[in-house]
Image 1: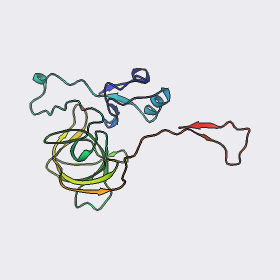
Image 2: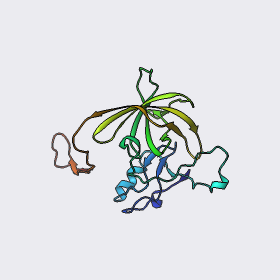
Image 3: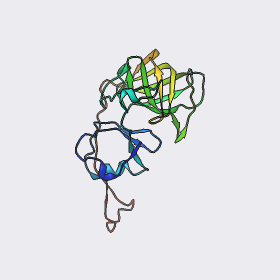
Image 4: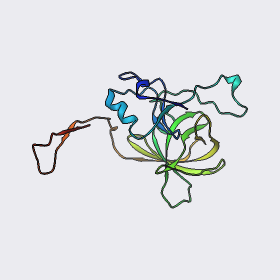
Length: 201
């Protein structure tokens, strides 16, 4: 991964690459737009920000390596899930809480997801293990099963999953959710006019 500084990020233009945190987890997909400096500051607020290393030429790739071609940030994969969709992942017989992951890409034969975590701590999954996933498309919750076909640690950590099976869909709303940013002013509870209101977005 290549570390970035706030000056490296274009403002008001689509990102030319995905943004990752220091652990290789997806923060923003390529093509997303940072409207102003406040958005840039928010990205760096919780730690380091990186971009993926450039992909080597096909003839320079290690034997057995999986090449992930760039995918548009809003491209829809299997079940209508978009790249960047938050996923819950766990073993089918695990009664505990699920780990958090994100869809970072897909091919005809399967899915690529970021390394699952429990509140910042890595979850453990092995190649050949069957997993249960849930994801929200904006209108429906999809539940499906996959098999972990590969555990990859370079150029960043991710899992390769098989084609989804045993798909279940539960409609949640009739219209898709729309992203919005609302400005508001925060004041002290006692309404003290001496304290200047603070702007929040």
